[in-house]
Image 1: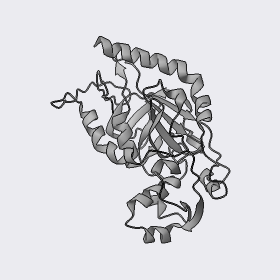
Image 2: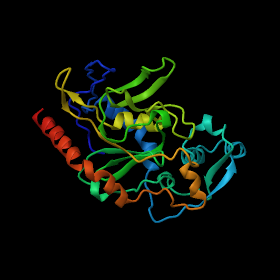
Image 3: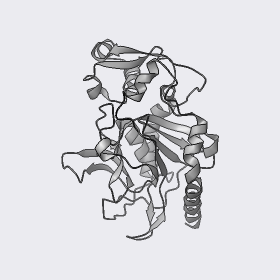
Image 4: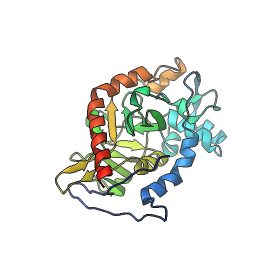
Length: 299
């Protein structure tokens, strides 16, 4: 993995700015780089996808399945992800979707392509798919990590379009409800206070506009994505990592991943589709990247 050149590491609480300087080790690596290495190994081993395979699925009883596989964390991770949930919520479900074959790499159970040649010039980019309730991060067009998400419910839809990561905090208290503890929080829309973070995944869009993630995914993206750099309290010197949130969720129909049983490819997102999604934003993304690279060279 190439070193991430970080000019300034900032943590910005909503409507305020605070600059934080992290220590470096003897090799000059920042704290974020060191922590990213710790959480990367397990995830990276499971992200290689094989586009040519077809995995079939079936229904099963969640409680019986969980009892039978209570010690198999790998299979649990796959099944929780397919059902866009986590362990605590999975046990509350009735019938769930499981694959007939667990032998493939983790990313094969999710809809994003393993490589997007169109994105080869973009250093880092993250996508959130509303229709499939999944996310994927790419480096130079190659899939880095993918996983489930639960986005905004119908009353509080997550805004779609192009955004850039800005500030982050390992722990943040929601400004809407003091009881909501948001771990590994990374803000995307500053004024609206919308971002991704670890939180309960009931298996459908349920948030107050934020992008909920499983713990491992939220922690990885916390260290992998870049913060913005501020010139001062009111202006941005360089933008963070581009984030594209796209599509619509059909709140009137069954969960989209239920269709996998009758059509295993029903919610796949092809490389061609991803190119169409990214194309309207490519100029802006590359301009922000060039600006960031030029600032790093100057410093």
